[in-house]
Length: 54
Image 1: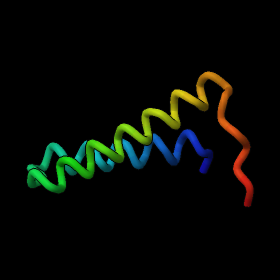
Image 2: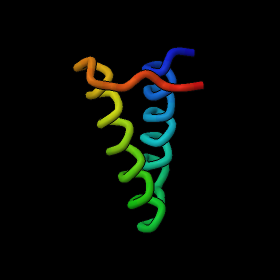
Image 3: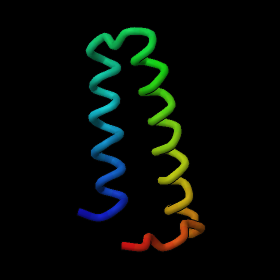
């Protein structure tokens, strides 16, 4: 699975958790994770992401 596909899958799963009535603490954590995913997607889109070392 590509990096973008992986990020999009994680984003979708987190969005579903939000829709299913996450508690306030869980909501904050999910929103933080979503912000990180959005940043990563934006970096990948702009071509500024450093290659991952494996």
